[in-house]
Length: 468
Image 1 (tube, rainbow, N blue to C red):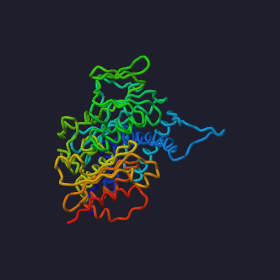
Image 2 (cartoon, rainbow, N blue to C red):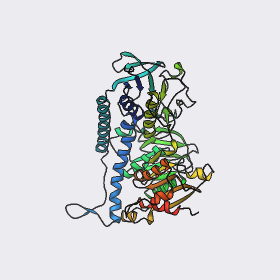
Image 3 (cartoon, helix red, strand yellow):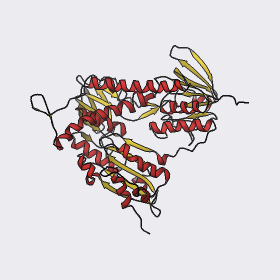
Image 4 (cartoon, rainbow, N blue to C red):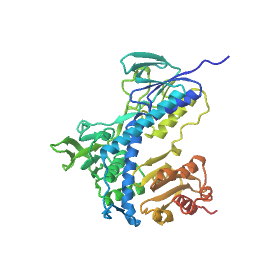
């Protein structure tokens, strides 16, 4: 006799939600996703996919500058040298939004092919096994569920003294409606989002001022890596204001003014607010059914994505575990495997690779330099500048490095940092080493192509070889 089919209801169609839906469907469950904005969520429609496409466009433009150092230049049909490339922002944003929409459609098609039902609307927990869905047409449905996954994500943080208007004062979700490139963009916030978009608009041709409340940009990242990025920002003409906390942002007759707490004022044509995000967890019935929520509004979960209520799981930015699409997706997969009785391993944050899409990129995995300095892990490190790598020289790469961390005694690789173009690709062998407990000797003993940037990963491992 066949077991009854399990029913799964998922609130939110972002990476945590749609990846969970695919796993649940594969495991034989009847799956319904209640999604308000379109499958793919903010990651696909307003955040990761759009911002990285914008950054890729700016990176492409920067290649024109590098080309001259390599002995290459452009000429018009009359033989005159072309000195400047120009970004047409309307066309750039049109392409970005088209790519995001296409990605969302692809995800929707995959869900449909696997038998997942997607309801356009919002969901609210009535009890642990019951969800009320308010659909786009105003009607409601009550959905029974053996398992509920909350994957409602987060939204840009807005403060009372800096209200976005979508025209001059913008959140990172509103920038793709701009018709013209900002003449002078003031970016408030020097975390990952602020740093990425500041450099993107600098590369597209805007004058950019970055307002940072901390001593340096990217304060949560490896200090050596952040120093490289800040130096690159300044070399390329960005005005970086360190230890400069915003007091307010307001419109002027012709643009914006950002007032700092020390009394200084920064005038620009536009302001981009990158001051964090808040979880979308209010008004969806969590408190009514007893789901524990932290003071910041994030849903409290364990390493298999369980909440404090049996049968209710959560994944993604609404949990505050780690705001990465890859982590959200893994949390969603783990939740479904655990709830539906499949083999599962708890979430291992030490093996999560992350990337900041500046130019050069910063990729990290495992323990950090701060962990070594504070004695969290007994390890040693080595850092190799890319300027000595032959492939880097060929490509005109002057900024960046590879840093590896290995446990003392056995030489197990426990972490690493790569600062380089396409560091997001170069971090993969280091992530494999961290995930599977490989030693520096095993990493160094693996063939690399010559010449290649990955050769610096193997060379760093060779330098960490520990003799008995």
